[in-house]
Amino acid sequence: MLFSIIRNNKKLATKRNPAFDTNRFAKFLIYFMVAYWAAFLLFMGVILPAAFEEISPAMEPYHLLNQGLIYILLADFVLRFTLQPPMSSELKPYLLLPVKKNKLINIFLLQNGLSGYNFFWFFFFIPFAFLTIVKFYGFGGLCLYSIGIWLLIVMNSYWHALCKMLYNEHQVLIVVPILFYACCGWAEFWLPHRVSTFTMNLGEGFMQGNVSCFLLIILVILFLFWLNGTLQLHFLFDELAKVRDTKLNHVSEYKFLDRYGLVGEYMRLELKLYMRNKTAKKQFISAFIVMLLFSCAMAFSDIYDGAAWSSYISIYTFCVLGIMTLGQVMCFEGNYIDGLMSRKESIYTLLRAKYYINCLFVLIPFFVMLAPVVRHKMNLLAPISYSFFTVGFIFALLLQLAVYNTRTMPLNATIMQSNKTNTSIQMIITLLAFTLPFVFDMIFTQIAGRNTTSIIECAIGILFVITHRFWLKNIYKRLMKRKYQNMEGFRATR
Image (cartoon, rainbow, N blue to C red; front, side):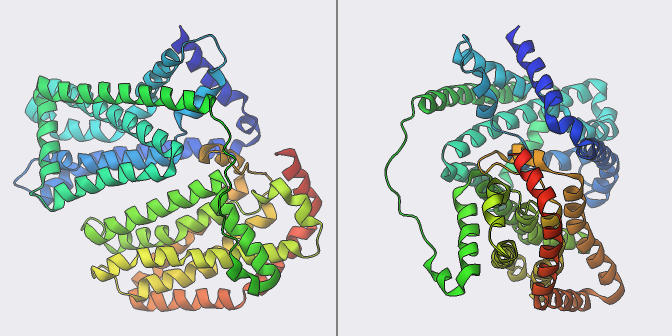
């Protein structure tokens, strides 16, 4: 009874959200992306069997897929960690009801396991299994394998819920999943393929109906279910009985920025925004994790050695932090926009400070991408050209959103809650900021070669950097023409 009530409440909450009716473009884009990824997974499930047969004729395609199950589970974990909100945020509205807390937590955990998202990967696995498994194990083997994969995805969902809960309690606990996957990587690459051999045998056991394989995963699921419920209840009571900490902490004032005058003051404000506020801080950390994962995958794996993959990963690594920060430019400032508008040209100074800080942030992906350079997967000119192209062309495109963003973003909302402030213009410009550089890079690489393309990207980026005051001034003037319209939007969405 309570299970169905909470399920209906979630559906009603989605329908009654003001953004559900007002932002039709966002709804269309969400449905389109779901359909796109479903079609993409279906396509990959159809073409990969033939590709695997060419790669390794001595092995069956399902053996190769089962060897890579850990990578699929890692991708699923990263997607969940980035997109799904923590369970604690869904629990809070029900805490005052006369319902036992442990019963409430168990229901939310049960809903997590039965979520429709856990079936999404079937768009890939079922066509792949139909083409490779049915001829050996029949439709019974296909059904058993599908059940086993579903159990693995459910296990992964509870593992994600545990890591997300620990991360929200203490951000330093992000090291838990990092250490776990680092240990898996060590066991795979420094020992004789222990992880891939285990997952291959596990998948084979699913197809053969081996009870011990199913029992092993079910026991892990039950353990994670119990551990999630126990820790969630503990953290919940801690939060309800929490006493406000009045201890004074030393906070850096970034004294080195004093020499830059008013621009330095706004740069200090920007740094404090990212260091002190939950939403901005989590965006920064999430972007850094994505950078690290992509650069390591490119440096230590042969999967992404192709020109297209190399270009895609490199551009995404350099773009992701800027898209997360500048894609919502002025949205955080909507909380105190009246104070910013009270001083002459303070917005122009703020835009300059944002640009300079994000230019400094580009040093992070630059150093991260040195790993593929050291491994001789790319030359040094490539990350240099991507750096200049990012701080030049891409940042100039993203900062245009300062004119059109009119929705205030809460400083301490979750990333999923913050995404509700997105508008159609914001989504289009953000999409262009990622796709245009990739298309440009691929076309010119085919026409002129990799080194010539890198030189052209460097030249374009340097040109935008040299002229940054002119186009920032243009953005400022256009923003001032819409000043009252934007201020009204920021006030209405606080």
